[in-house]
Length: 232
Image 1: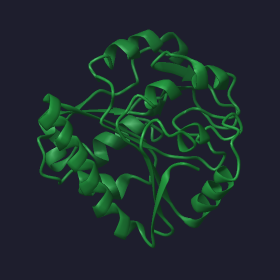
Image 2: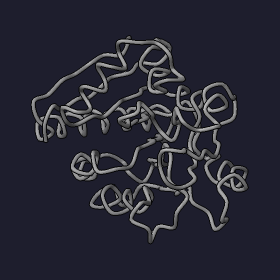
Image 3: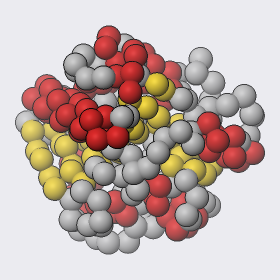
Image 4: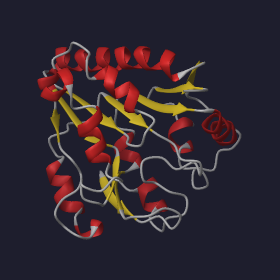
């Protein structure tokens, strides 16, 4: 594994340090080019960190936020990452940020790729900060080892694509490997002993089709840091 590992005893120790570091990189992007871009992951892991990040004193009106991926469900659905980001991050000072959700009115994610690509075209790459998560199966974003779209997601030059895992519900929309690697800083945010065990398993091999997160951990073109808390 070529990524830098920063290990903390608890998420309560990790979160304020992580939030401050993200804010610093976003403000640096604003200072350099007038705006900054932040791609985030969903799930429960980032919620406490998002709360701290939302209170950071930066020029949030110049920050563009989008999701790394989302399930193709309406925001009224508990599975919606878009709804989670609005509830957990776009609050306090971060309420001034510019957020564009992935989900459109189209019923089928595969038919919505061009629309979502157009909606997110204002996110100029390289992205300033990209925060990835990791599933127990080693998937990241919605690039699953079980999905028929795996090879495409790992090799295409397209920015976005739809996927449909066989081991998890819902169609998905996701940024591709090449798009996510077009960034200034990658993070992998993990909490818990079970995720540490998965990380150790991932680090022991190099087949990115078996564990797609390896496509990011085993590269050296983009700085990548694993922020790991062994307990909540």
